[in-house]
Image (cartoon, rainbow, N blue to C red; front, side, top):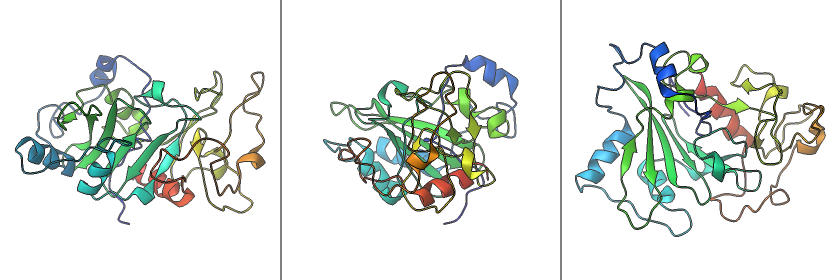
Length: 269
């Protein structure tokens, strides 16, 4: 897989409801050469959006997954890149929990996020001139498919010093409580290929073998008095997720470790 020069994590995609003007005002990406809000993006999602608007392309609606399968097909994103995140660190946080994780799919330059019973499919694409550009598609079967560009909400977390000061991507690792919210007073990490394995995947489901190394995935921070005191053995080398939540509504019953590691790598490259 070719590694993109900028990247995202949908799933990447932490929204903390900061005032957008605070973020936009601190950065220079609204000025040339990026000129983020004024230049028409040319990424593959923007091209698909124009094709749909002009009647040259159509999307098919799935009863179980909405526009997701059709979008993955049109954007050439494999379902086998699926990763699952259960921390409430993204736009549709009210839909996300340990029992209803958010699914992320990606290729070299596109990232797609889907929530069970979600209001919208979230998409990000790497534009050759503007970097990360964010979109949504409403999951309403009564309405025709419409890809809409985000105008600031996503940038509250995806255009900060964590994304090198320009619109970009990040993968977060947290100590989640039973609802998926990061525990107050605990550390949080933005992880990539350089991160210590022991700091990775807090708030994520992880399937696959990784030997004697231990991560933060597949676990809840249960001890309120010492929430970072967790038994990493409980989440290690897990092959199946059915014991943790109902995997039937998802395209795959897994959250592959290799897919997670590639996702992290792309997010900061």
